[in-house]
Image 1 (cartoon, rainbow, N blue to C red):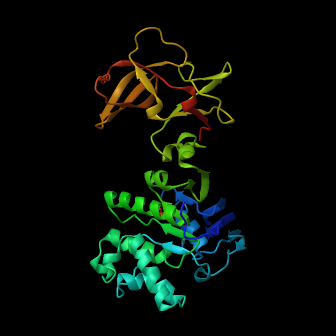
Image 2: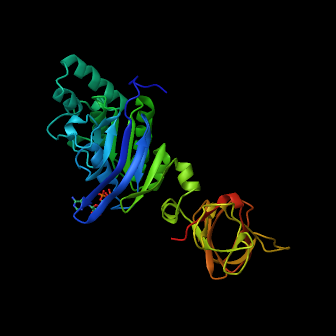
Image 3: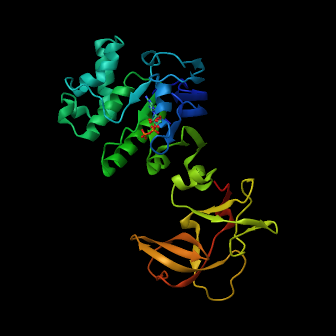
Length: 359
Ligand code: ATP
C-alpha cells in the first residue's frame, strides 16, 4: 500500500461511551478500538446512534460517560477544532462564495501555511479527486458528486490522521453513489487514513469497510469484517438487518434440533443459547429439488407458495408446515422452472446455518 503518511497515526478508541438526552439513551456504552488506517462503518437504522457516536469522536458532542482517545491521547473533552480531524457531512457545506481551489485551500489558510505550500497541496488534492479542471469554478457550478469531491479534498488537504464521514453520499443518486464509493475506497488505499463512515446502507457498508459496527438503539450489536457480519451475525437483529434471512423455530431433541413438524433441522453447533433458539439460514444457501425419491435427515418437504421473478434469480416462498422459507434460485438456462403449487424438497449445508437466540 502506498501512503502519504509514514507514521501509523489515527488510532481511535472508545471506552464505555454513552450519551443521554434527558432520560433518553442515544448512545449506550459503546466501546471499540479502531486501528490506524482502518476503514470502519457505523451502520444501523435511523436513530440508532451512529451520528451521535461520530459527533463525539469529532468533538461536536461530549459523552456523559466513557472516554475517547486518539493515538493514546484523551480527547473526550477536547474542543472539535483542536482535534485536527477531517470531517465530511452529507450536505457538502462548501463555502459558496469561494472557488473550488479556495475551498480546498481554506483549512491550510486557517493553519497559516505558506502560499507555495498551499498551492502545491491544493493542486495535489484536486488531482487526486480529479477536479483540477474545475479549480476556478464556484460550488453552484458543480454537480452534487463534484461538490462532494471538493468536500473530500478539503477534509483531507491538511493531512488529518482520521477522516470522519457522515452519510457523505446520502444525497446522491445510486450510480453516482457507487462511483464515489469507489473513489473513497481508492483514496483510502492511496492515503492510508483511518476512516470512520456513517451509513444506513448495508450494501455500502459491506462494499467499503474493513469492519462494520452494526448499531441499534444506541448499542453496537456486532463489530466485525463484512463477511463475518453477513455469514455469522451474532443475533437476529444483525442477521435481518444485513440481508434476507430465514429464522426457523426449533426445539432441542436427541442432541439436535427439530422444527414444529418434528423434522430434524440441520445446523452446525452454534451459539450457546438459553431456551429454544432459532436456526438462521440465508435464502441463497438453501438448495431446492423435486421431491422424488427418499428424503433423508435434514431434507424438508414443502410446497412453493409464492414466487417472485427478479431477472437473474427468483425468490421462492416455500411452505413447510406453518413456516415459510425464502429460497433464492438462480435462473440459469436449463434450471428447474418452479411454479406456485409445486411440491419440493429443501436442504442446506449445516455449516451455512447458524443457531441464534430467539429474540
Ligand atoms: P440517522 O440515520 O437518522 O441520522 P442516527 O443513527 O445517526 O440516525 P442519531 O442522529 O445519532 O441517530 O440519533 C440517535 C438518537 O438520539 C435519535 O433517537 C435522536 O432522535 C436522538 N437525538 C439526537 N440528537 C438529539 C438531541 N440534540 N436532543 C435529543 N435527542 C437527540
